[in-house]
View (tube, rainbow, N blue to C red):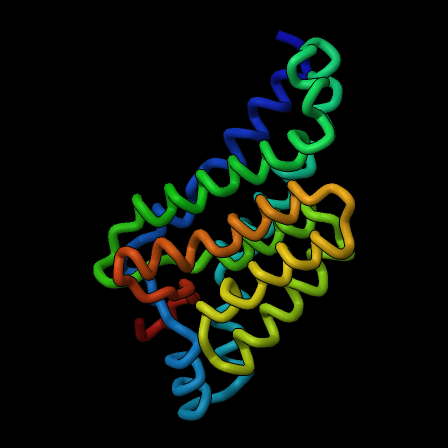
Length: 211
């Protein structure tokens, strides 16, 4: 097996790995409304620290971006030995990694067993979009989704607003529509799964010494 194949397979495994599904059930999980209540009773900076200092958010950000980038960096090299892939390379080089990311999001939802709660993979989704969808499409969509989510204090709004913007922006700003369509499907998947399972989207935060 060549070195490029090793990187490709390793990156694909890393992109599919549903790491958040294995977070401890003893960890604190909060929606944005609960964090806002805690902020009113404490300090804005203290609440921000509990979110920012949780290692999982940063790992998911790096994992999504690094795995997606490595896939793109090696997939063209591997395609030189596959006539079938070369025939569909104009759309497959982006859609295949995004499909793996969708599988990861599905696995997170299925494997995370906290009653009534579902992990909102905001960091992972944002990172993969920024790498796999053209920046002129992904950057405005991610920023607008984050703004709406924070302004309205609701995690579902990140996915609800980002998905259509990614899809519609691809129609007008990107000649190759496939990455934007796959990116929109990836973005709406966590919300659709949470709704189907009747679970609340939450994010893990750093535990305080008092629990």
